[in-house]
Image 1 (cartoon, rainbow, N blue to C red):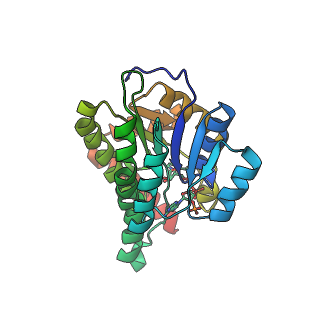
Image 2 (cartoon, rainbow, N blue to C red; image 1 turned 120 degrees about the horizontal axis):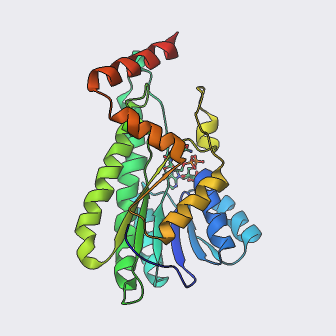
Length: 261
Ligand SMILES: NC(=O)c1ccc[n+]([C@@H]2O[C@H](COP(=O)([O-])OP(=O)(O)OC[C@H]3O[C@@H](n4cnc5c(N)ncnc54)[C@H](OP(=O)(O)O)[C@@H]3O)[C@@H](O)[C@H]2O)c1
């Protein structure tokens, strides 16, 4: 664990703030007295959130996959320094049907989850760099997933995007260590949100977004390198991941068969 306490009001850039986990994190941060620069494509929703949660919500609308929007984010974020945290949470999920293999679907998911996060890093790094001091150690948190720890059926695109994102974050942690910018990876299990409401399969240990946000913010306050929850799910997945390859492959294929039955 990287050691850091959170004594003061934080200024946080949060992407994917309009829905699901990001919305719950926004509410949790505001309830704790922090100031949040909230990003999503839905401008009206961001304005509604500022109206309902108050002036500690600063809307910054735009698309994390759009280079022009990200240039604007970079300029705006610099004017708001010192910035304590960036939580890069915007993401999407689409499942692949292998009978109608669709590389465009893979491209869309990769573009939002991996390239969109990389563009967000590019947008926020100057503000984080300008914010570090003896008493302030900036934190970059990247919301990945625990789903890629097991080869789940239909998750080729989503799982690959989150595996890539985790590697990206860990490599970034190594490169930013000398600049005293911490990097946290967040790996949720199933959390009830509009994204998972579309799932047509059972989701073990599905948790409430508010509970997920509380755990996540608590872990980020400690600058934990890795935040994962709910533990019953993520620890079971870690055990599954330790099984011999042949057993894992049989289990994954059985899941895929039961999915198409
Ligand atoms: N729910 C789960 O069980 C679960 C589990 C593991 C990981 N995760 C990860 O947690 C994150 C949030 O998921 P969620 O379940 O809360 O999903 P969600 O309810 O669908 O919310 C996704 C958020 O991302 C934003 N977003 C999507 N594409 C964007 C883009 N191109 N530019 C800017 N914002 C964009 C959306 O805002 P706009 O529509 O306003 O742009 C929305 O606020 C994702 O990275 C997801 O992969 C979720």
